[in-house]
Length: 251
Image (cartoon, rainbow, N blue to C red; front, side, top):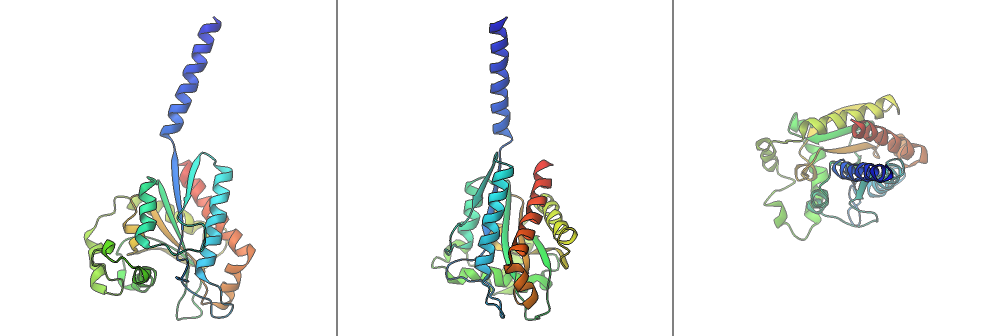
C-alpha cells in the first residue's frame, strides 16, 4: 500500500514538472534607446528618455519576477548602453518570447501634447503615425553595421511601404494586450488617452511574438515631464503595465 502511494506521488510530481515546462512563459522587456542615443529630452527639466525607459523597465521586471517567479523575464538592457534595434529583436527571438514590451517616452513640437499611447505593428493611418515611427527608427543611423536592415531607410517614406506587404500573425494578441495596457493608463492613472495605434516600428516587425511599444508620455510637455520623472509617475506606469500583463498572462 505504501509503495503504491509513493508511486502515485512520484507520478503526480512528474506530471507537475512536465506540465510546468509546457506552461513556461517568457517576457522580454525593452528599455528604448540608451548610451549615446538619448532619445527624447525634456526641454524644461532636461529629463532623458533613455533614463526613464530603463528605470521603468527595471521596476516592471522586478515586480513581475516577485509576483510571478515562474515567468522568465528578460531585459534587453540593464545599464545605460547603446543597443541596435535588430539586436533587441534578436534577444526576443533567441529567448522564444511569448510577449514583448518596448518602453519609450514621447516628444512633439506641440508643447501641449500629452497622454499615453500604445502601438502595435501595422500601417493603419500610417501617415498620421509616420513621424513617431521615423523618430524611433532613426537610431539605425547611429549603428555601424547597416546591412542587417537590408536597405531600409528610416527617413524614407518609400521604405515604410514594405510594411504594407507583410502580414503580422501576432496581430490579434498584440492588439488585445495593447488595449489592456491602454485601458490601465486611462482607467487607473487617468492619463489623457491617445489610444491604441499602429505604426511601422522595426523592433516590432522583427520580433516573432505578440509585441507592443508603449509611449508613456511627453517629456516635451513641462508638466508631464515632471510627472514622468517623479516616483509617483514611474510607479503608476509600472503598476498599470503590470496589471495589464497580469490580465494577459492569466488568460
